[in-house]
Each structure stands twice: as C-alpha cells, then as structure tokens.
Image (cartoon, rainbow, N blue to C red; front, side, top):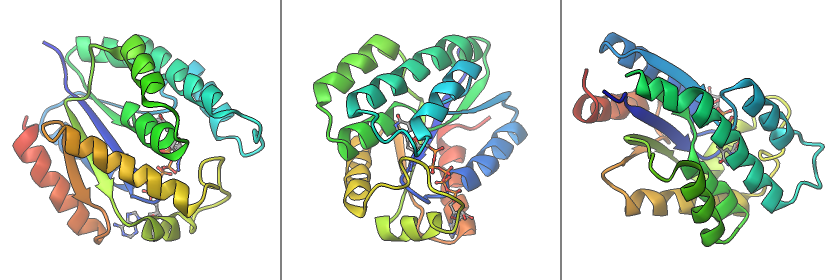
Length: 207
Ligand code: Z5A
C-alpha cells in the first residue's frame, strides 16, 4: 500500500519549521513511519543544488536556471527518497514541493505557467501530495518574523512586492484544489496555529 505524501508550504516567516516538528510528532504518535524531508534538497545531490539556489552570491542566476535547478533537485529527490518511501508504505512529510515552484518561480518570478506545467508533468506527472498544509499570513508580518533570523539567503532578499505575488499564487493554488489543500491562518500564536493543523490531521489523515 502506498504511504501518504504530506507537504507544508508558506511564504517568508510562516512558521513551517516550527509546525513541521509538531506534525512529525503527531504522525508518529498516530502510528505512521515518518520520512521527514525538504525541498530544494532531501538527498545529497539535491542538497548541493540547494546550496547553489540559496547562495546570496549567485546574483547572476537567471530565473529559468533557477526553475530548472528546482526541478532537477526534485527529480533526484523523487527518485532517491520520495517514491521509494511511499512505495514502502511510509508517510513522507516534505517541507515545500512543487506548489512552492508555482508560488516563487510562477508568482514571484512571473515565469510562464506552461513552462512550469511542462516540467511538473515531466518530473512527477502522476504524483501529487495527498495533503498540503498552506501556512498563510500577511506578507509584512512574515517578513518581520523572518528578519529576526541570521543572514538572509538569495530568496529572503526579495522585495515585499515579490512576496506578495508569492502569497497570491499560493492562495490561487489552494482555491483551485480545495480537496488537497488546507489553508491555515499562520498569523496567530503558535498554539493556535497548531490547533488548526491538528484538526486537519485528525479529519484528513488519521492513523
Ligand atoms: N523555493 C523556491 O523558490 N521554489 C521551490 O520550488 C522550492 C523552494 C521548493 C528555501 O526554502 C527557499 O527556496 C525558499 C523558497 C525557495 N525561500 N524563501 N523565502 P526554505 O523553506 O528552506 O526557507 P524559508 O521559507 O526561509 O523557511 P524557513 O526558514 O523554514 O522559515 P519558516 O519555517 O517559514 O519559519 P520558522 O523558521 O518556523 O519561523 C520564522 C520565525 O518566526 C522564527 O523566529 C519562529 O520562532 C517565529 N515564529 C514561527 N511561528 C510563529 C508564530 N505563530 N508566532 C510568532 N512567531 C512565530
């Protein structure tokens, strides 16, 4: 039996890392064998591509190169980790997946939809997450939270306008696939954000 594929998404400072920890614990307690991973990354080769993608000194990286590297990392991640884990009945909990490409490269960088759609079909046409938790909050609030962290990476240096487009693209994706997405109000206190997510897990995942 195939395992479940759960992804967590959101803009800057949405609190993904904070919630991922809690989601992983909840799933384990519910009896799932959890494989926790992230994108870009998740395997040695894909993590090397992540380093290139996030390196603030790679100022000349074109938007198309960025898009191709995201999908190259994803192809390796799927082949080496995601697909074998799901085939083995494990629950894969992934910090970002292709919805992030639609949001950042589609919304943020404004790359054509057809290009993203073609790559999505090529890389994982038959596979989509079973559940996507979208942590949504006003862009300014997220940027304030994120600014408390250390040095910014290549994406974190983007503008308010860029992150506004990212947020809009995420919400558009969620509206188009309500059976897969759960939109979480991430502007609340940690406990309140978690209780929204816990309710979704209880009704949509179970043990
Ligand atoms: N990217 C892309 O462009 N295309 C793609 O296809 C993919 C990715 C897959 C790396 O992702 C970058 O890759 C990402 C998009 C791009 N760039 N950006 N920006 P990442 O997921 O590794 O990077 P990130 O978005 O910066 O995630 P993060 O560091 O894991 O941040 P977060 O998880 O959303 O936030 P956090 O670290 O849990 O929380 C931020 C701060 O807020 C922290 O101090 C917390 O203690 C605090 N916090 C968290 N929750 C709350 C609440 N509820 N209230 C108050 N404070 C809170």
